[in-house]
Length: 353
Length: 246
Ligand SMILES: Cc1ncc(C[n+]2csc(CCOP(=O)(O)OP(=O)(O)O)c2C)c(N)n1
Ligand code: SF4
Image (cartoon, rainbow over all chains, first blue to last red; front, top):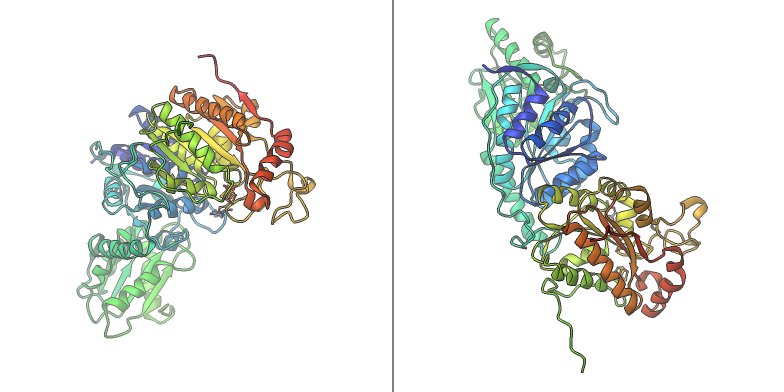
């Protein structure tokens, strides 16, 4: 087992090892250690670090680097990611590739500094103008985040799409033992610009939006078919299935273990890709399941929408109730989840869908 | 008969500018300079939004259409990962000095090693002639219908002077497309700016006073006259940051 490392630092080092050639960003808690670390580390490996004047500028610098076919990175939280939406939409539209790390913090507007999962809708639906989606990876541990860093670029490049690494404030700030991956020296992507006009479709010129729309749908369908990732347990005989990602996903695993020991037939699905949503996991669920329960760290419940849709899509013969246990911010405790199940069983908490 | 000049190889398709527009002249000059400097097969354009973006359709070069105002940031990213390429940000005044003033100022502030060419036509051309930060006092536009009132809108911005006086940039100049003499001078400025970049001296900006007959609601000739009589006195031509002797 590797050394104890802080989440943000481990992720930043994993990015260096994945061959990132440019980082551009702007400080914001709880993501800042990523840029602080890279300000020293990237020049050591001959890559560029830019402290941008704003998040807007940062993502557009990433777009410039990405158009040249190299691995580019930015990271931020809440309000900073809001500013980056323009650039993410444009990068998606041009089918360029990059990784955006969102260390999610709670709140609307300026938000707070608390760890949360309140950006689920924004990250999984797009967020900027247009019809695009990003592949969204939602790790539940520092090791998983580190292991997914190279994957994030591989997926981005395979599909020419933006990959979002959606972590949480607490994951960025906590320490865990962690093994770091080996260094990769990625090749410059063949379509990247080099001044020689060898690749021709970048910009709004030479484009046919009608055929591109068909291609875009095909691309999204392929990603949905091939790139769903998740962890599950106890689905075959479950009366109730919890669905939770990230740190709540980890906590729910503990709750399921204890509830099973107490004789409750429960299982869990922990999405690792939140887009594409792991609908295939739901196909494994006991056909007589009594309910799905999302456990999430936000105020209103966001993941619940995808859980209900997945239930509708997979258990087609009846309307399985979908319940929501939102815990606002932080990490829902095992006790919170167990008590939530009790309230659902005794009718104190009604189904959302 | 006078000998016809050769069209630079990177100019390919016709571009759909209005009759009498200044953009076409500037693009021709940029293409000639790139060819003369041996950079025409080593060039990436960061194109602004607006009539500047029409440039992309006519050139056989690498080019990325940047979000409105952000070309300064996009070009920064390009140059940092590909320092051996020549990078040109080509923008309108609304793009570079209004919505993109932060990106423009900060690229100059960092002395990024690329060249910015800004077409100052004192309005937002493509969207139908709204006021921009370079609109002249009293100028009627679709959003200053009574004429620009500088009491409430600020004074027209002189960007090359600003960065030349405040920042450590390599080169800053302003030219115009009004007369053959001015066009020749402008070409020299563009050449200087690009050459500064090729030699790694840092940020260069060339602003061009350019007519927009369509939105100024003038004939092309009247529009050229307006530049001479009204604009040049406020926006002087010349080099504000000359290059070190080389
Ligand atoms: C974010 C954003 N806001 C507004 C627009 C609409 N828009 C397109 S072109 C333009 C004006 C461009 O004016 P300028 O930069 O002066 O260039 P010109 O057309 O005069 O060459 C505007 C406002 C846009 N495309 N994107
Ligand atoms: S609107 Fe103005 S700037 Fe745009 S092409 Fe026409 S004349 Fe040129």
